[in-house]
Amino acid sequence: MLEVKRSEAGITIAEAARRTGVSVHTLRYYERAGLVITEVDRTQGGRRRYRQLDLDWILVCTRLRATGMPIRAIRRYAELVADGHGNEEERLEVMEDHRAEVLAKIEELRDNLELIDHKIGVYRGRLAAGDADRLWAPPTAP
Picture 1 (cartoon, one colour):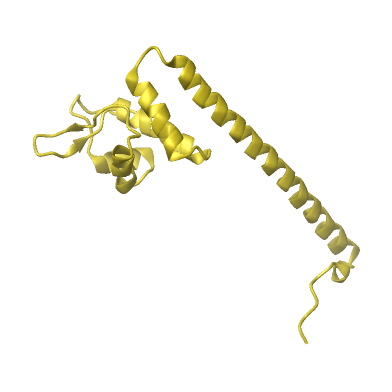
Picture 2 (picture 1 turned 90 degrees about the horizontal axis):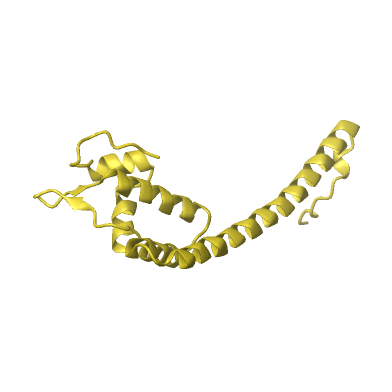
């Protein structure tokens, strides 16, 4: 996980964005959308200060988004985590449902990759044989 090496005061939103790889805008959006499990600390002047827990959670959110989990599902998961103990079975269900969706996407990608590999093999074979001009191409317009 990402390490906050400063004091308990936390780090700025710009530094949090740099360390997590998401934009400042995205960090603010995650807060507004209810995806953050704790209230982000603020300075007396109202500036956000991110702690290690915040950075770790943002990493969870970005990875879930990268796997295609909808914002509403991440929000639900965040709500469950923020609520604390007693809802672990529901959290597990959210993760298992999403895992099944990810596995289905992976299988679809494998099928698509198989077609791409086949096409690459055809092109390599035809180029090596010197008859690539026989490959199908749409007719040109008159």
